[in-house]
Image 1 (tube, rainbow over the protein chains, first blue to last red):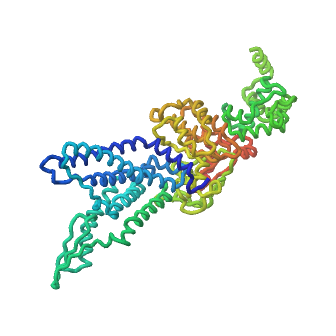
Image 2 (cartoon, one colour):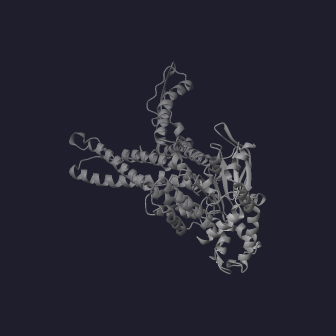
Image 3 (cartoon, rainbow over the protein chains, first blue to last red):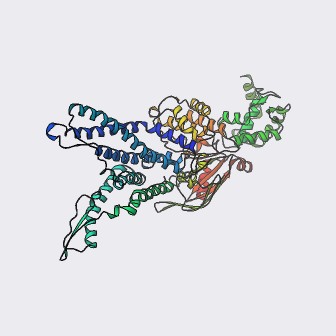
Length: 267
Length: 120
Length: 234
């Protein structure tokens, strides 16, 4: 028997997880459809005559629903570690940590993403058909470019998943809310205020303006000095080589930390 | 079966087996329960029953046929009587005699009581 | 089978074990005795890899439990004092969890449930605490693993069930298996235990085979008075 990974054992583990959590998964699916429905409903307000100039934007519903589902799923996938009652049984089960993490990852990322994409595609296909029948002049935004910015997408989804998994491992009860709280604090608190102070320290200038909110809007620095005005968009930390860090290394680091936490967890 | 602390459990089990033999419930060459069966029946650790069986084998009360189990020896009853009488005389009799003396009972009275007991 | 040498352990700065040494052999049913709070449950958790020793070496079946390798975990089972069971029936529970234990025998499991008079098709939420315990005990014995650790198994069982428990454990015992039962209710397990471990002041101060003891003495040691005696002299 291979102690690190055994396919049969992984299959049994998957079977156990599905049998015990199918209700929660079903609930998640219902939630996803409801969320999608909400987005579609809010887009429907653009359908009437007077709003016809505004194109229907189908992509926010995909990205945001996917993001939410991945986050919730990530927090839930490790509830064997976060729920006190279940820790005993979880740690006594003869499965390897790699198998645990692999299942958690599969049920947090690829599966919700695929299901979400499928639900999104089908829902919009049906709705758009209906709307275009009634209102043939309806404009639909098919430009994915903005949303395809891989770095933000990756941070939102990949890193976000890793963060919620880490939260599940370390924060115990109500870890989803706690992790959200930490993220909001980090996002709003640290990046918003901290960014300002950091930039001020880096660029001693007369004035500094930076848009809110971080982190998905890169800051624009306007430096007024006796020599003139210069405007810089600090985009570089998300580009090229640096992108590799955000897109790949950071989530991998976080997953590695989750794995190590699994190994050292005591009951 | 309720166990007491006067003598080791394995000997109490031996006495239990002896009783089965003396009351003819188990006759010579009868197969007796296996170690595990008796352990389950009496709710006792099998190692303890093992000790009992080993002991009874040395006393030649029972014998074992490899692969077939344990059986009452042909002289089992007599051998058991010999051993049990010995322990009875050494352990229980002194206590009994002490009590008799304390209660100032005579042998005649004892005899009378014994026959009464036999007739019931 | 189990070798603990100079184990030290503490719970949040409270030292629990220091220099604890214990060697256990297969083929025995060990009774782990000790005062309340002395760390009996923690010692069992140590053997199951649920907590890690701060010092010393801990070897169970030649592996260190802290690594929690499936090859070790599939050879031991821990029956907790308050078992947590998922929302399913006893029969389905065996289907889901039995596969992780290579020697699990479902027919044995169902037989044990029958002896305990626990309905196999009833969901756990409808069973009483005692019945749920009986399910876990049945499962533990049916896995046929070499090492079974039980924390107060008779706690919550009615008298007939305690008798059934003794019968089933006596019947499940083999020369290759080792069962460690931590208990307060010594009288329940008096005749079942054939080796006594006493945990006192962070160490195992007593580890004896009762059958060997009985040979030297002329009486059967009463476990309760034995316990008092040993504690007094330390």
